[in-house]
Every structure is written in structure tokens, then in C-alpha cells.
Length: 137
Image 1 (cartoon, helix red, strand yellow):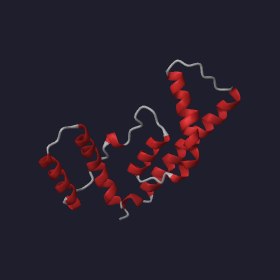
Image 2 (cartoon, one colour):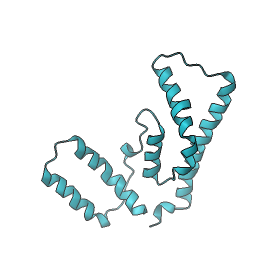
Image 3 (cartoon, helix red, strand yellow):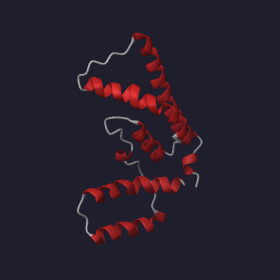
Image 4 (cartoon, helix red, strand yellow):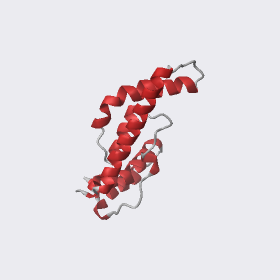
């Protein structure tokens, strides 16, 4: 499983590049051959394009980041509405000049929920590193 994540890290950006370019069939076949013969490829670095909020972290983007990092998304499922409505919708409204108010009574809850969400993701990622579960095959 860890090997698959490393290979995803390597090949996903290349597949994305194929979808936006006019790559000929021989280049596509060469990529498929490389994927099929990649058992000896070593992980060297995380491709930064794969961990990208796309300027607006919505729940689908968080799911993608969790997938790439090998972090389970289920613990964050109950925060999908919070991310989409409370954070993203308000952020976009403010960024586009709309009058969006946050009640002072709601501010502490929003801050606490945001920090809790960030810490939960950081803890899940750190646990994978400390426990070395990213190495499990």
C-alpha cells in the first residue's frame, strides 16, 4: 500500500500533464510501460502539486490531500459542512467584497473548530510518520 502511494506521487502529475497536452500515442504507451515496470523505483520527494489547496480548501480538496498523504478522511467527514459553509463560503464572500458578518459569539467557536481541524490533520499525519505506517506494505 505504501508503495502505491509513492508511485501515485510520482505518476499522478505526469498523468495530469497528459490530459492537458497533445501527447502522441507512443508517449502515452511509454508512460504506461514505465508505470507497469516501476517496481524498482524509489521514492525521493513528494510532488508539491499533489498537496495543493487550489486556493480554496473545500472538502473535496481535503479528501484529495488525505488520499495523497495516506491519512484517513473519515475523521473529518463530520466537518465537511463546516469547511464548505462556515469557512469557504464566508471566505469567498469576504474576498469578493460581500458584506459578511461573523457574530462575536460565533467567533470563538469558529476559531476553535478551525484549530481543532488543523491539529487533527497534523496529528494524523504525524502519527503516520512516528509509527512509520507509511512504510507498511
